Length: 78
Length: 245
Image (cartoon, rainbow over all chains, first blue to last red; front, side):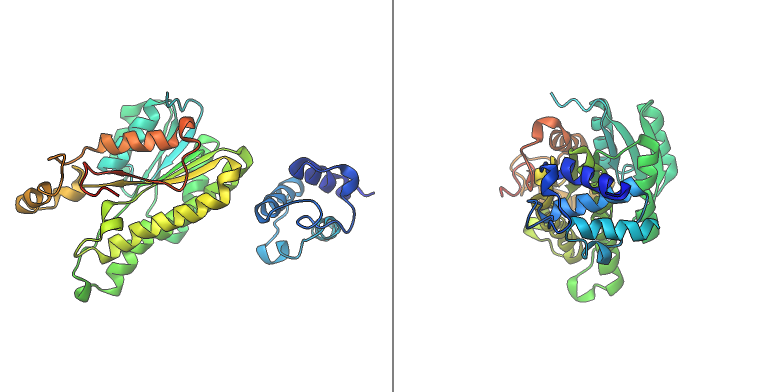
């Protein structure tokens, strides 16, 4: 697993208090990991800080799963 | 009780009677404060009186760019903004049929829109800290209405609805959002009233007197305190019984 995925996973595990093995590529933050809408805003904030990037609101809306997050951040930091 | 040691507070309209009293009360409870307002001299004077833990950032809340810069400058000065007191307010009274779009817009911009923008900006830090207090100063007229103040009453009632909606959203993060609704308080704003107007108003107040800025500040201090952690979405009316709502 890439460094980015590890760091994203760490944030998700810490923030949502879920088991690491539940955070799979297709795991939806809301449907599978128990996040509410405010959690997703906080996750995006945490990603922004961890990776020093800006995630605009319309892009944030497309980040539904762990895989989406890793993909977006990989592109944004490339 | 009501110890704010280590907390940081941004108070808008701190050059006014109520704002100054609020800043003094929060500072007296141990908070570091940023005093904001349009005029630097009175803010600086208050900061000098308070001594340590007091910063000054001037801002015109009718200017969107200055509203955006204010919380950033306050956070730079203090390290964070744990407590936001939306106190700044202006009046542009006129009979409804004579009220211009400009009078309406100015009052809504300064009294309501700036509070929305400031609250939005400080929420990020509060969410991370899992602690925050937003207190907006509204007015009894936001609940009762007042002839000649359609714009002001709309803005103040708007603050109540805004605060309740935000209170829902962030309650689980340890952030409370409340309002304090003063009645008639001895300040420059009410000093503009004629003696005749004042005596007529006093007949409507069971307490038989106008309130003091310190009595509003005490309510804000309570809502800003750790002890008020279970109070959210509330409006605390401080009006000598003028409107028991």
